[in-house]
Image (cartoon, rainbow, N blue to C red):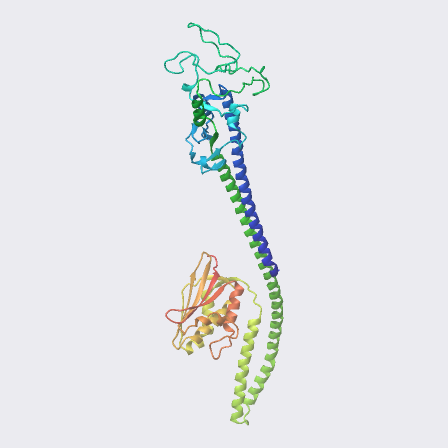
Length: 527
């Protein structure tokens, strides 16, 4: 299963990267859709502007700038449309409404130009609106003119200072027609059909009746008209250059696009974060699965090894027990021989050595059997003062032999423990301390509360102490720092402590010596 791990992690990373790329592409798509929606809205607005110009055109393609700007101002909405401008061929503003537009973009290509807060749209022919053609009509040969109201022809008022009659205008003459005689008092004649235009009726069509199907469903089509009759050719050409509508600029607010992009970005970030958490969780789950599988394998092997060790332990304990019987026979025969009167002294000494070695081996076998015996704890309320006093009495000879001073704290607490096992553990700890301290050494027994229902017991001595590298080794079987030690005393102590669910550790004593601390003792409730 470990061989699959790199492939699994690679798959997780690939899936996560795929998710990130997917969300980035989707975010770009949403932003593009928001921009397209704004462009479509610009198309609608541009169509509306075209209709406004169609409805306000006069004189075959002339629009009053004041009326046009008033209509454009009504379209301005700060949250949507910020500005509209009509430009001439030179890029100068002919009519405008709303905020000032940065005309530096006029030299840029046709299309949409985005900044942080706005989008500027140029030459909306690409957006579906040709304002020049819509306003002037397909039959017009010149662009739509946006002229101030003061410059428009007014038949009922004063068009130019110093005159209150119709201005003279050129008209075509029939070479076969004789000019009519006019007196000085004759009134001005109405211009012939097709030679001029009246501001309210528009030019007449000499070619025939008007087509009701043209210009917006039933509205009579007005025929083409060239230069306005009140303008000279030079004025007309100058007006085309300065006031002819050549291009269309619109500035819309980019707030809807930014709002849609921001909302979608948060959504994509949330999806990516959830995907990241899911990928990490899957990776951790796979790692946990591998770890648990390895632990299960190790546990199975450890259980098998433990079973074998248990069998070997029982076999070794049985072998040690069976070995004690021959040793007892050897010891008995050596004692019998040593008591004979006719044996030489040298043989008597040899028999004594045999007895001593037999006792030493028997003691080791007893310690081994004691260590290999299963520990079954039978808890009850135990008074530490009584147990410590009983162990001290059992070791009175050893204490007096080295003149060791034993100090026991008054009023030791009562704990829940197996009294026999606790007595054996304290016996081994006291004996180890007696062997470690010098003559006239000191051993002190103290207890302290470490929690509401827990306590700790300490056995302190002023011996040479234990080296830091040996503080964990001394609890292993056959490890001893004494020449006459068997190496099972502290191992048995640790076995008893663990069987109770306690902990034991070896710590340095100040200024010298060692401290054996048994912690997590369960205190008995107060009587």
